Length: 309
Image (tube, rainbow, N blue to C red; front, top):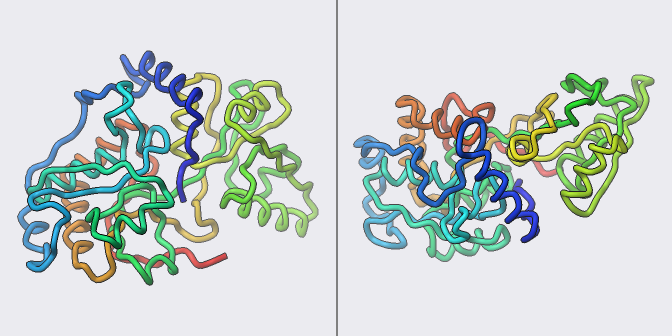
């Protein structure tokens, strides 16, 4: 799972609008300085769990790959150079917890497996979902739930979407070939079996057209990764959330720090994440980026992953 990359024009516009709103709550701070960023103290238990033979990409440094695909998870600040967001903040907290400096390596989504396997980076924090297939090659330390969001225009009569029956007869904007489309097609199948109207799925090429469809009432609902829609709603001010669902529906979906298989680093990172959960730094970080709904109660090493569909 990953967030689609913003077009250059839309991305810069998003940064400018979010920065204006970010001067005070409830907007986003996309400045390179990040004065509200959490820090953590070294976690002795996590440090002790690092294998003696683990070779970091750079001595004394935790090198993390992240894909700056868009706010609030990982993006470029208003200086267009500094990588910021919820994922970089988690990376910083983990480096602090392991007593290391942090080095972020901006990495295209398609390139993170090679960067990890080659040893160029020690771990990947880039909205990577845990799947059974990926577990054959990588180890995982969970740090967030994978959620999709249902958002509507402010004046929409739709108030809640929590189950298949709630989408009956609606027109829904969704990306073609996405996990969200898979889920909606299954919900349509269940509704057809129950004698309910199918939802009409609409496909558009770019974000601006999708949002225009909702504003012009040519569509009722938009479904995309939850975090991205949270940012859009805060930025634009005329959309609201009416529901969420697991990105792996009907299964639970976890997002995790990804490390090389059997490298031993996953255990140390999991201990560190649980320490951050206990201290409150984890929760405050997700709250700062308005994705507290995606918080986990506990980090786990290699939990059950999503099956292949």
